[in-house]
Every structure is written in structure tokens, then in C-alpha cells.
Amino acid sequence: MEEILDAYKLPYKEEVPVVCMDEKPYQLLDQVLKPFQVKHGSIRKEDAEYKRKGTCNIAVFVQPRANYRRISVRKTRTMVDWAQEIEYLFTVIYPDKKKVILVMDNLNTHTYVPLYKVFPPEKAGNWQNG
Image (tube, rainbow, N blue to C red; front, side, top):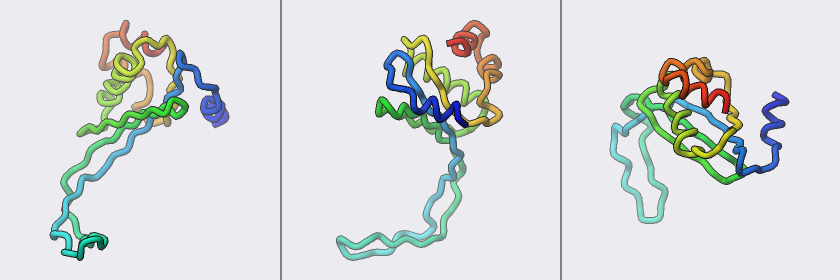
């Protein structure tokens, strides 16, 4: 925990971004009944009944000291999805950075293993060492 807090306290360095990453599964819901009609300027009133329309996964990358965030929505939450998000991080968001400090939880897919399962070793190895 102390290492994470120390990473958050690091001074802003454009050449070494500190990026926080998190994922969350999310339910997609639809209304069963139409919202009640209300007078103009009143708060919309909705029934609590809903219809489940599946799930998705929300991935968030935040660089707090640079006032930056990226949110992506995917249909699934697999190791392949995670590896593709990491690829996007290194090849699109920070392609010119030699080092990125990535802070994330210890979910079983948040390791180097998915990178090596999805990408060639020379590509995955670049991200692991960089």
C-alpha cells in the first residue's frame, strides 16, 4: 500500500506518466414503463422496474496530475480485452514514453501473462520492461 501511495505522490513528469487503471463490470438496463409525465421544470419520475439488457465492462485510465482520463466500454472482461487496453495505452496514448508507471489492482488478469498470450514476445516484452 505504501508503494501505491508513494506513486501517487510523485511529482508530475511529462516523460514518466503515472497512470491509474481500473475496470468495472456494468449492467445494461432498460425501462419497462415509460417515465411519468411531469410539469415543465419538475424532476422526471421513473418506475423502479427495469429489464436487464446484458452487461459490459468499463475500463478507465486516469493520469490525475495531467488532468487526463480515458474511458472505454467493451462487451467482455477477458484477459484479451485487458491486453488490448494495455496495447492502446502504450501505442496510442503514450507511444513516445520509455516508461509509464501503471497503478492497478491485483485482478487475476492484470499481469504480464495476458500480454504474452495475446501478442508476440518481442512486443509484450517491450511493455513489460518499459
